[in-house]
Length: 242
Length: 291
Image (cartoon, rainbow over all chains, first blue to last red; front, side, top):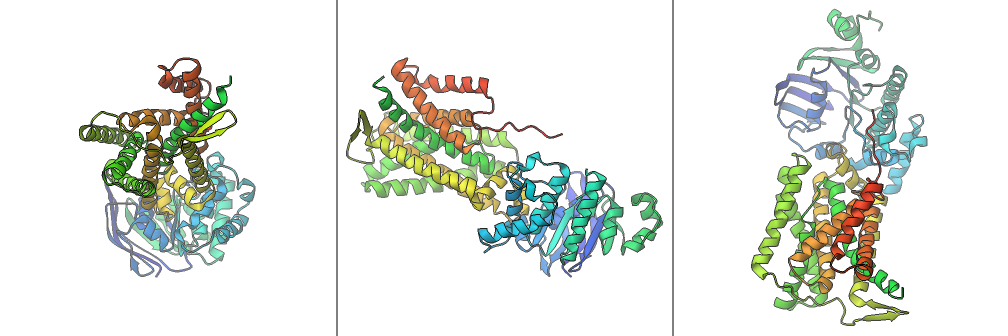
């Protein structure tokens, strides 16, 4: 098991956001964590990355307990987190933003990093054209591409993707999910948090449904699609298609 | 008119000091988002430290210089731990107030210990200078200009061309995301506190033979360096350099051609003029919020 979460509880000032959730991700899987706004999806990812101070339970990554570890140390274990809202460095160029994705890896030469930036940019349409442009000038879709590219530069054992489709036009969402599928074909392991449950389940091997800080359901996408409550609440009443 | 080249040389010399201290400001702004109003006190402490090593312990000049700069760097880390670290999550204002408070404490501690009388610190070289054409190049001014230009060039290359420089910029722009990428945020920030204080201390040691060692050195240098930072564009490295040099030149020319008593006012008149015409400063970028 690459990532194993048991009894995870996270608390902000307003109260418990996560109430003892269990979740696991196997190597090579894409696992979707779906749920409505405020269900605790992003908090789950932030807890894994060590960004939430008040957490309890257990999180192991590659067999190593990581709860309580510093964010940077967790990243250096091979866990890349593409946060909600892209969070690019606005005053740096697209190329520099992507380059810094390799900061968790030691012993990589500058020339090697530059080569890898070129390789990663090849995966994304138009990114090469934007290489020298400051990140703050990009559109939402372009920012998302750069954020995912930056995550890939970490050569992560596990990529955490937080709401990659948020605020994007439908055509751009299709493009982002095409990239996620591409990442999957390269053998990457992904924990994907999405409000767009339909898209998330279309690329996932397994899914979890989170509601008000509690795990409601888990299973293969077709099992979730078949569930009446999930269909009504998160899939817009869509009939099972898988 | 024949005085002009000589005045320009002097102006560039004193402007190099402002540029160095201004760079200390810029580095902390860019790495930790800290506007350090005690940057001038770093210069004052560097000068006093050098004076103590030379006069009380009779340490040879260049060894005293290196030891002073290193000790100032270590002091910078202690300064960061006390004034910045406990307040790092509270926003910019509490940290600014904390640095102002620390500056007042440092100035008054030195005042209580060494008194208000200015003291003489010897220059880097014994020779008075060289005559090049009509310009007498004072050896102290030459040392300042050469040191400043080497350091400034080095700093520009580190920030703009190296991965470490980009990591420092990333840390300044979004510390949480920098940490998520595995950038050693805390190490970088305290490294900058070390360098910023060492740079301020070195500027103080270099300028002290001209301005004398006194508590007043802190406010003179800090205010001009801060003005240089605004004139050049807040947080801009080329801006800090050009802003510092411009202030040095303008105040030297103003003192020579207009009035000596108003020497310290010229920097701020220029500051107001630049802000009226170009509010973002000479090298600042106008950043608009995206909808």
